[in-house]
Length: 229
Length: 267
Image (tube, rainbow over all chains, first blue to last red; front, side):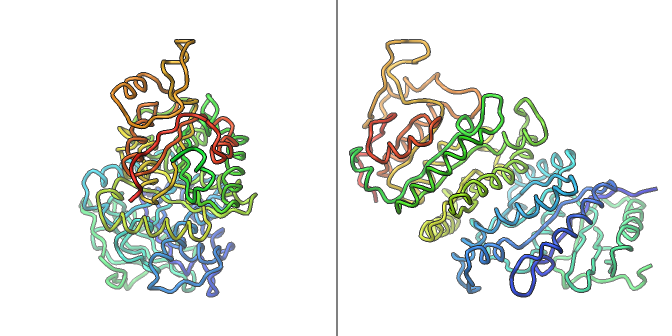
């Protein structure tokens, strides 16, 4: 039987952008198709994405220094609107609705906001809408995370009580399936294996009655399962 | 500031409510949005810096999933805000693109008032956006803040934004022409009050009991907004946004709506 789960998908910026800083529409379109398909198969998905600053810089025709925070925020404000538009257009082709959720890192420290966000996620998912989540860079007090949005994905997974963080890496179309509760991660090296491996991991999780949601604090701490199959 | 001085302002915040952006059936009025984008882009071309505070996300979200009635429970409203905000920005981008005017999206919460670092970040970002000639389009970050949906409104947000960006003028566009001496719907002798120099209990009394059914704000929240801006040394105009070209007339110094005059020097 098909296993249903709640999956946070974390996209690295290099998954969507070419080395010259341009959005790769083909890659984004492919991603939208895979995720829409996964959603159609019954999985609940939340997408954590970067890319606002890269897109904003490109749109403004500026190359911004990494330490110029206020310009990075400007690029984020311009680029986020553009990023979500591009996602909307891509997902629209597969008849999949998406919504924009911008969070700050304090989401877990304020009980009321945690609850609000949790409710929003639950409602969106119950409406078959994929939330597309990014850091609200414009008001963020933390340094802008140029590349690493794993901490945000981790917060989202915790708030949403997700079963799995699925990490899309740019290297050779690899996916990392990181289950909750400290289970070891699985590396999937091609899209064909993705669904069946997810199924197997979710089945495994459903057998476990532990309700704790523990993911590694950083991507460097992720330990892989030796036996992939 | 005298109305005549509006000809020389450098920075304006314009707030549009749901009643301006949509028809009474809740669906978007694209024609009016198009005129708004045109007017704001034209004002930008005059060299005036423009900030737009826009409601409408929940309405757009409702329309997208085919809801006829506006939702009542908070989590549905928040979900529809997340759905609708993305769509609303897409529409604004398209409309402003037509006039070669760049826009940016800025979603704020009351944190910008209470947390100094956020205040500073938001202010820096907005100043830079304005210096680059970009029109920031601001809304409350409804997804995490229940305050707006439950208690507050974008009138107050726009007053906070006007203060934050040290604007010269705040223009509140809604379906209300002005502040009247009595409810114009009930009393045919009601007259427009062209200017207000201080928010007296009488003024607050006049504002009570008027409002529209679609947005969250009525006249009361607009008076509250005017109070905030007046204290910060910023003038406010309240008028009807049915014809967005009214913005040109306001900036030409014509007597339109109610002018709340701040006696305070802008700090």
